[in-house]
Image (cartoon, rainbow, N blue to C red):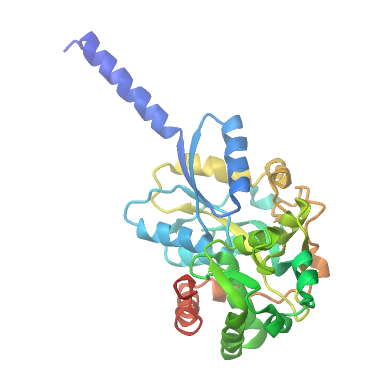
Length: 340
C-alpha cells in the first residue's frame, strides 16, 4: 500500500521526535549548584545532547532514585558522598559499568568501583573539617576550635551549624567519622552534647559554611573544600582539619538501573572522568581532589597527605543496613531539622 504524503510526514515527525528524545539526559547532581551548572554547560557545548539537571543533596538523591526504582526518571547521578552511592549499589538501584576511563583514575577512585562491583566510581575526594568566621570569633572573644572536642565548649552555644545526615552526605560522613573515631555509643553521646551548640541542621552539606561566610553563624562543619571555596571568594573564613583525625569522602557517580537513556548516560560518564573536564572544575569553585590522575588539582585544595585521615571504611558505612541503622539512631537520639 502506497503511503500518502500525510502519512509520510507523520512518520518523519515521529522519527524526528524519537531522535530528539534520544539526545536527552536526565542528571541528578549532588555537588554545589555552580559546579553542577558548569558541568552541564561544558557537556552541552561539546555534545549534541540536552541535559535535564536537578540539584539534590546526597541523601535526597538516594531517596529519589529509590522511590523511582520501578520507573526510573534519572539516567546518571553525579557527585555527592560515596556512602549513599554504595547503598544504592547494594540495593541494586544502579547499573554495573566498567568505563574505559578506569585506567586513568586514582587508586581510591578505582577501589570505590571495585567495592560496589562497578556500580559506582570515584570522581573526586575531600576531607571533613570546618570553617569559622574569624570576624565573629574575634568580636565575641571565642577561642578558635582545633579539635572535635573543642566544638563542645559553651562559648560556641548557638554558633555551630551542620547539616541533617538524612539529607546530607556531608553530615552522614561526619556521623560515620565520629563513630569510627570514638566508637558508636561514645559518638552519639558526643553528638547529643554538640546539639546544645547547634543553631540549625541544614538540608545541604555546604550550607553551614556559607551561612558562616555571610555572618549568620560562627562555624559550619563541612568538607574542607567547601570552606576553602568561601575563603577564596574573599569571606573571612578560616579552614580547620580536626586534630584527633578526620574522615573524608569519595565523591561518586552512578548509572541508574533501568534508565531511559543508558547510551547517553555512558557518554556523559566517560566524558566527566576525563582529565580535561576535571581540570576545569576549579573555575566553578570546586576545590576537591580530582579522580583522574592526569587532572590538575586546584592550588587551594587541602593537601590530604598533610592531614590526619582515619582509615574510613566505605564498604561498612556505605552498606544499606549500617547506614539505615545510624540514621535511625540519629533521628531518635539527636533529632533533625524539625526539632530545631
